[in-house]
Length: 344
Image (cartoon, rainbow, N blue to C red):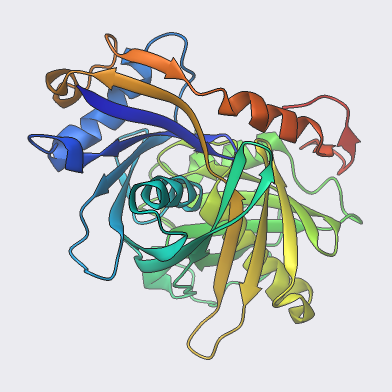
């Protein structure tokens, strides 16, 4: 039997597959198909996931393991911050380490376990890097004014007054921020419309781009929502929240370097810390690493991308996570940046 684990960081959910347990590893084509079929074939008691995290043996002796990320549409991402936290927890439990390196498509990234957010809500800190504002890293065409930092009158925008920034971390992100003095600048509809526009055929980001809207709650607290390339709306996007934190520091106040920021999202919250270094900024992304379910299935079914006959064991960690979330201020994504009473 093969074991899968359903995991999430801020409700950005995945199936985690450790290829090292298999007699025959899945090919890239099989992993892509699995990511596309997982939600349709999974047992009904499981909610949808945003993709598949694949753990395998690293070809770097200094790394505890390797992580690959397959989005819901079958495409591959070079990095996933929320996913990396859950993979870090998995490898920590496998290797009995709390401070180590994980090989990713973005390079070997340092990770470490931190104090749990709450009882039965384990947390990890992962490094998000490298950072680039170059057109090639962004996949950006037909816009020459770079770096793009708080620029208005963008040809892809419906409003000439909305300001945008763009950064690769290394996933490409387009970000629009607003402060509490301009609460009407952003909306779910405008985020969705722009996200869909820039992730279908377009002349500016032909390979697509992650789009995040965020607004200031106070100087060190933001709310961020992301339309993710290859997925659509997500409860949270780890690299999106990291990129937004970096843009906030660069455009709001560089005195926020090395300060802990709180980032709320539709799935909960994370913390970030932007570090200024001579060879390029980096961001620490700190948040939960929750294992909600374990699935057991035949290896043949896994190769076929079929989870329908999987046996499911619930961990009860989601109950603890929802208890933690219920105690957080619940911020709405709408016309105003104000707390609401309902929980996620």
